Image 1 (spheres, helix red, strand yellow):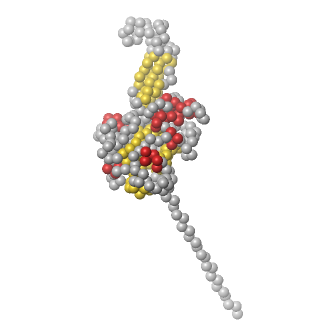
Image 2 (cartoon, rainbow, N blue to C red):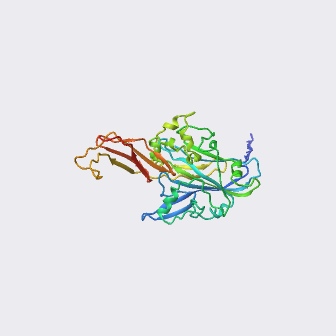
Image 3 (cartoon, helix red, strand yellow):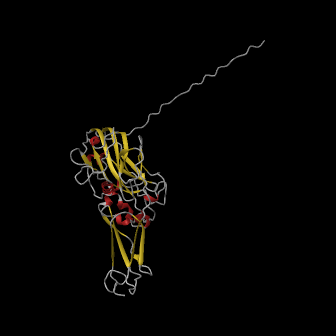
Amino acid sequence: MKHATTGFVVMLLLVMTIPLHAQTGWGVERYEGFRASVNNQGNVSQIGWTTGNLGNAWHEGEWVPYCLTLKNVDMSNTGFSDIKISYDFTGGNPGARFVDLVRNIQVGWTGRDYFPVTANNDWGWPDASGDPYSLTTVGELQTAQLDGAYGRVWGSTYPWGLIDLDNSQMNRDINGGLGAVDDAKRYFTIMRSDLIAAGVSSTYTGSLQIYFTLHLSETFIWNLSLQSQLDTPPLDDWGGYVYSLTTPDPDFLNDSRNGSGYVPGASGHTELVGPGSRTVSIPIPPAPFGELSGLKWFDANGNAVKDATENTLDGWEIYVTALVGGIPIQYSPQITGPNGEYKLTGLPGTLFTISEIYQGPT
């Protein structure tokens, strides 16, 4: 008689706990963008800080505010981790730019009064006095979105300081280099020394808030390769300098693509890079539909009306200038056609100046 033997297999499962690496000297509390929405009646319907969709009231050329709230900040820690933030450059659509400039990077160290972490408010942009823009009407909202002033800081009632980043930290690729014209993302980096230079004590402990605005790329600039004109103060302090560099990569000079309005869907985003990473959307504006056209003729009798006997003038150079962040950007000369006509399309809603070089009587 055989006895059956029952075998027991004992398995020992070893669970290894791998500690998550945290940022040194700070943690993440919130990362938000500013929502702006207009309803069907053309009135401001929703404004305030959110981690979700940023609304429908955005167009190319406007400045979108973001705010990163840091907790457990210990400025005395000399190993303080860099704060690195990315934003889509061509991400999701290599034929178009999402964002091309950054400005008004600043730090607040009692900023909760401006950007409460428990409730949203309508303080999106500082005006010239350092107070929040009034945003009760669409006109006021558009003024704030297009505000081209450089260096505006959130007032003096509470400590806020402008962070002056070196060009080597602005609008770079992930490794801090110039990168390529079709990079999916671009980055800017804030170091401990930058915060101290902005006014934060080297022994400060508590919370900090990093505020900045991103510029929604404009089709008329990128489609016509006008970006080198952004290499001028104060725009170059916001990262525009990189687009006029002829060395080591001249491709920036001749790069041609559409702006943020030609990016379908809502795939644009900005992100706090590294452990504790947070992501906030970038609003996708509608494609620009503005159009400018004109007719050039020899006004023989000077009545500003084209009479049947007056000839149109072809081959004349027409110059068109637009304001971008307070900086005049000039189009390539438009040449009048056989019927004296010229036309530009895909234009933003901004101020245009039209001029010509007198070419003598015809």
